[in-house]
Length: 377
Ligand code: DGJ
Image (cartoon, rainbow, N blue to C red; front, side, top):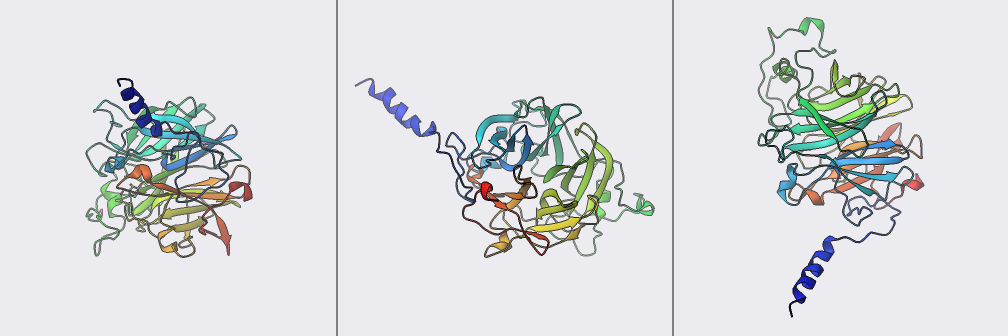
């Protein structure tokens, strides 16, 4: 009878060793999305990078249960041929959180919305992310930066901080560049300003110590200049900050955008010489109506275009929140809206809502599709 036990434990272990799935031809928003090993892709709040014929998908690796709201593993990487985008190969953990409790990225910190860019000057891959220090909830509101020699990593943590301490944003008028009569600030706890509070009050509050940096993206323009766009000022106002030519530091040039509009989940893309923005409102993990905007200059002025979602669940953006807009490598001028359908009780089961961006009266729109293929764009 003895040999039965090891045999039983092998059988129990079998479902964990997922079988390679068949080649998929369609993206099915909201369904489980299996990688080439048959596991649901684990790369939430992600960003994508085209590099040497493949698209690389970086995102938050989630663990089961509510523990998935903190980082216990790090940033997961997948890749797909640039003309596929449906079938993804697991490339492993690109950035690992640290076992050292004193590390900025100690296990149990909050590490969200990683975005990776390639810097041709240094030959390095640079990862930016939103970092919250372990045990402090969302109070720290910092950015983190890590670098690697290879696209899939391993990434080495470089630094974390608030943005541009002691530097005035370029759209603060000269006569207002003083803390002497800074408006009184109360911490914003909801998506509204207390009666009578100046919408720049949080900006002044954080001037000396540096601006808050939460939900974020990195956008690299055609001229190679990179920008960090992040929810700041207690999430009341977005900011955009230029990066230096190594993409690892801010230059000090930055601006406040969409003052007092409470936007999160920023995503940027460029089409026909214009800059396009898609983001969300500010309701925690719960979906809300997306926002969109257009500008001739990345510094603004930005013109809001309203909620790009269309159809039955437009008011909740098809139950999703933006994370990235992917230019389709094989189809210049076509873009994919990449979003998350969060499940804060079990984030490992959060789903991906990827939809082609369509255009209506010169505005980007998001129509629901049960299944679609990037090859048909
Ligand atoms: C909304 C943000 O978009 C997410 O990335 C995450 O930070 C949640 N808020 C936390 O509530």
